[in-house]
Image (tube, rainbow, N blue to C red; front, side, top):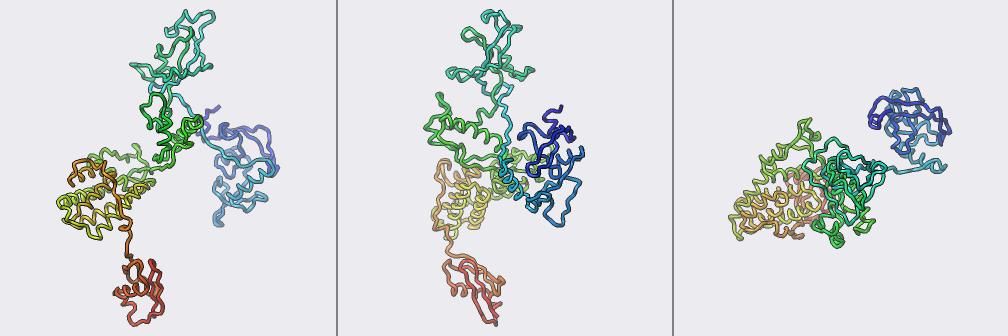
Length: 541
């Protein structure tokens, strides 16, 4: 007999024919029943309908034991031939399937399922794959499990005459009769131990703490459970305890649950979806059903940050030698540069390769911003912002604010780079107000740089308590826009005109463009196609 792990990993197929047959519900054909090593009792009902022609494991099994391989799906592409040397596992078109011939795979699946339901021989069913959750650990660190068990002694031996804590005392712990610790006796705390190494006892190190494990109650001996809870026991509901961490009477108060829950945003890796998030939701549903929380769901929004790969585009691994130690980056460029580059690499959810050489780009941005702040600090309030600078500043404030809300950090940093370049071009005429606004905006991304610039600009207190920037929506709207000019359908130039410009105004500006006027020289304008804000096309012969 093979163990479960061996059966799932073994490439060698073994099996035996039972001598029995099942009747196919749609064709009434006799289907032989085999017992196979790779069909697990824990999967579904433990019995499967094999399709040798279209499943790799079924094909290997059928090939080994000389079973019939019936092809019922073929490729959809005419130039792709069906190979009978291996299973065809792709989607295709049904063949040898009676009334379902000619149907594409997805449509055929639905039609066959509906047919089975119609004749009461089957139907659709959603199966959730979830294995048992082992909720015990044989280690010291962890919440003690508040369960204890009766202790039995040999017949004729009274409890008062023995002590199971003494080595050699014959006794039996009745694990088949678990008893929960009274609520009044909670919380159950761990004993103090000098040596809490695992040891050789499968019961765990707490089995060695005999004064803690064994106790008497009403003249009877009992033994505590020596396994501890896994880290999930705390992490599954930690967000509730964060609301009320010093509450000694209950896990959290109903008032704080009402004020703060559910969690607005959860940011985590995709691997959390089948671990912490799943278990946290289990616990939350129980707490909701028991009336401890008024909220049926724990999290309102979930964002999965993308994985950062090594410079070779592969997942970071010591064996590949492509691991990037962030401490090394911090040592060379500083923590702010590391933070900025991580956020500037691309969208938060995207998988991105790390390129240490590109960190220098955000370092240059930092240096530019620092230098322009120093220039602004030399100026007083008499240096006013011109219209162009005012518009760029307010557009940037709007962009950065909205991008932070949507967690589009890379585009927020890009907008600040554009503003930094513009302010740098002003040289010794950098307005102090613009420098202060930029400093506030960069502070969530590069807090050390932000605080240093804030101090240079003459502030004694931290910027952390200063109000966030506010933009004027009217200053974020352009009064003019740029538009391409076409002559006979080909772009010949570009004009900038007011947003409300009519056809006559657009044509007047277009004729000022040398490349456009050259194309129209000596020709008659037959037609003008003008769509405000989109296109100006001049048809001429």
